[in-house]
Image (cartoon, rainbow, N blue to C red; front, top):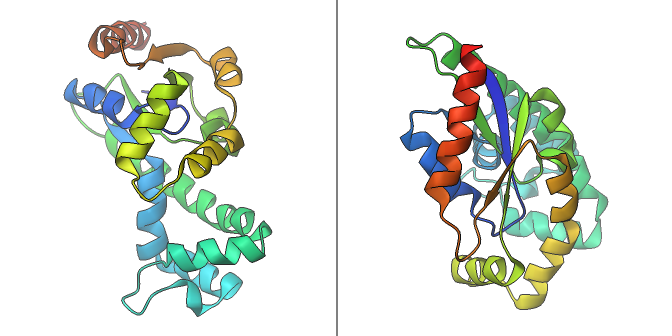
Length: 203
């Protein structure tokens, strides 16, 4: 069972692409959503976060206070990497359990997907067999982000994009590319990759 990574910068539409793969019966692990879930629900991770940053990073209802943590980052930028150092191993363990679950299912799936924005930046791509990179032209990305995240300003969006690995570098490292620009047809591209991965599975 192949483990396939799917990544791309903010606003490229990774989630839409993953929904098409899921419709084909392919299991999809959303690493970014898993990180949020584990931050709230994993007792060992919660304890480690509280020990590192104090109880103030959790709200009274037990939810991780992202707004408070963002303020902490503004005064202490290194805290972002400190949190990542705690969360990434927890996500790694959760993904391993996800893989084990699907490897035990019948009929066997030819592959599964791990979706995350920072697979290359975090180094977790090294644990995967192949990489799919989703791209889109910059104006389309910015328009999507502004429609989705109405609280973000243009400069904030541009700042997020600037901090992520450039598309050109991701493309150089990719095994498969999906163009999700404004005029792109997604389904034929996904079906072509799906067919190639099934052939590899049968070999």
